[in-house]
Image (cartoon, rainbow, N blue to C red; front, side):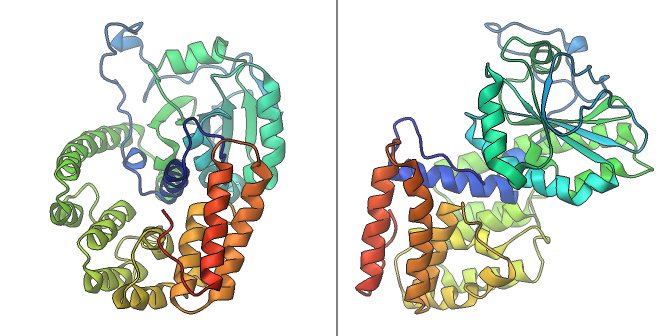
Length: 391
């Protein structure tokens, strides 16, 4: 995963927050990945150009042609109605952090389903000049191996026919097309293996699927309202109860993430240890990874016997779950603290030095010097026998 350290008003806390958000997005823990835009979006604000409800591009609409696009990578897609094919038009930009964060997920889907009929197209949008996209894709290499195209810029025919017509206000956004018709519009993180397989099935029912997605969107909105109220009140016991019982998230990775955060905030390490077992046992599905859900908390947690005991149970899972990715800086810092807690100081230092080597390549960019200084401080601390919270 590419993680850029050139940030507006950057600070160490912002750097960590962005890294954390990137990890959450890829692992399916963010609300945006569950919610799906219904066929007819809410009426836009009066200050913005309105599109008549009947004309809004969405689920059930005929997919517009890919007019005026330039293919940067992969074979040209001339139409999206070939029998047995599922097409994903995923809109992104080089300046968009969440877009970059979702690339590994899209690449994983491509590698897993391309030979089964899935055609993913990363459509660069909302930036002028093809060179930025070309250079970005070249640097990604095999980490972005699906088709990529340049839309033609901010005022391109694609922008008009797809983004403006669908009232799209933010990216990343994905459109799934089957037999020439849009069957999904939403955050690309919502394209789980289960969803892809459902949309590719021979007995796929577009009407039933559209109805289900609309119902999910409504349930997701209702859940978000309840969750936001609890967050505002810092009611972590309430958040844990909501994640454990609400049908929208119960048994899903997002619920596991919320429960894990609540346990840590409540300083209930016995419950966290039991929660780890539930995750490993598959209570929250196969996409729930303990190292990502519970590991992140180790970046800032204070050391205690209970914390060290949990670290000892979590540490072996980094091998079986093949985590973290070398460019997941936040995840690697978390792993380093866990290694330190179990007495593997040399490995902890190696993790942080690996992060430093990659981050240092961005020398001169905003936020880099502060981040590297904190890494150096932590490396020196480990060698001296201590590794305080990475704040």
